[in-house]
Length: 156
Image (cartoon, rainbow, N blue to C red):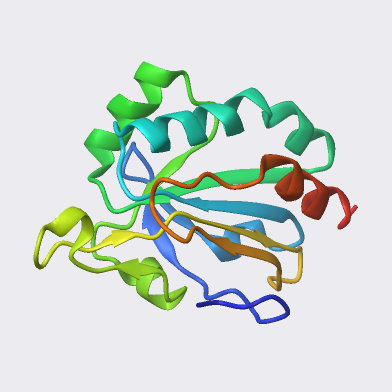
């Protein structure tokens, strides 16, 4: 998996409006990358709603939150609208970012051949270096939100 102190792999994905977004677009800014296995699932909904409810804390320290999953942009748009998400969900439908960060969850939920993202959070500094990395031991475990906020605040 991508490690602390390594340069974060750059990626170009599409948002729910099918507009291209690259990690390099955020050069000079702190970015919180939140990889989730699947939209419209219980733990993923709870996790992204927790980030939604804490967005002011991230904005106050100049951080941008980007969620990433392998679902289609149309699914992500419906998921964001239903949950009032106030940050983009990027579609990694070809799994390039998931593989670049080495967080592919192959045969997800027993579906042979289906690859999702392992639930993960990476904090990337303005130089593009990973300063915090967390990967769930299983898809049912949420990140420690206070720990993520502290990692972001430490970059201020």
